[in-house]
Image (cartoon, rainbow, N blue to C red; front, top):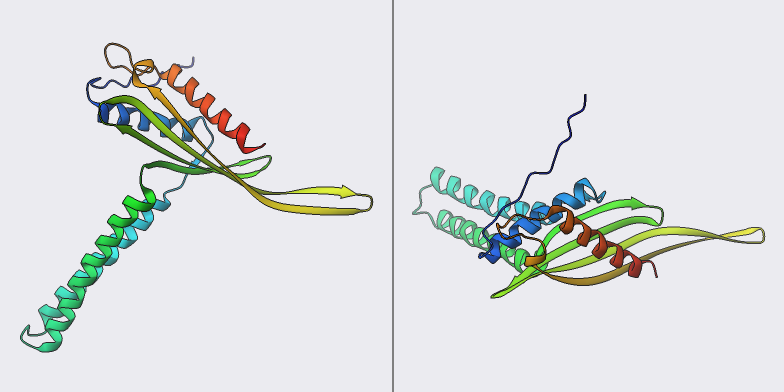
Length: 202
C-alpha cells in the first residue's frame, strides 16, 4: 500500500507584500529543484561566505597579535590597525557583491539537456504598493554540435543566452485566506520557462 503525499500548503498574510514574495520565492526554488530538473548552484552564497570569513580571519589575527604583544609597541598598533581596515574592507566587498552582483537573484542552477548544459538565473522583485510578482529569467546553454559534409565532420561549439521578464498579480496565485494555489503557480512557472526556452533555442 502506497501513501500519497501532498505538498505542504503555503499560507501568508495577503496584506504583506514581502510575505507574498517570500512564499513565491520558496515555491519557485522548490519547483526548479524538485520538478524542473535543475541542480542549485550556491556560488553567490559561497563567495559571500569566503569574503566574510576572510574579514573575520584578519580581525582574529589582529586580536591575537595584540594579545601576545604589548599594545604600546608601534608594530602592534600598526598590525592591529591593518587587521581592522581589512575586516571592514572585506565586509564592504561582501555587501557590494550582494547589492551589485547577486542583487535580486534567488536561484541559480544548471541541468543537462540534449543541446548541452543549460544554466538558469532567476531574480524576483516587488515594488512598493504594487501587488505584482516580477520574475527575471536568464538562461544560457553551452554545448557543441557536429555537422557532416561528405567525408568531413565539423564540430561547432557555441553558447546561447536569453533573458525574459514576467509579471503576475499575487491575486491569481493566492486565495482569500492567503493560501498559495500550488497547481496554478506551477502551471504559470512552466509556461514562463517554456517561453524562455523557446526564445533560447531560436
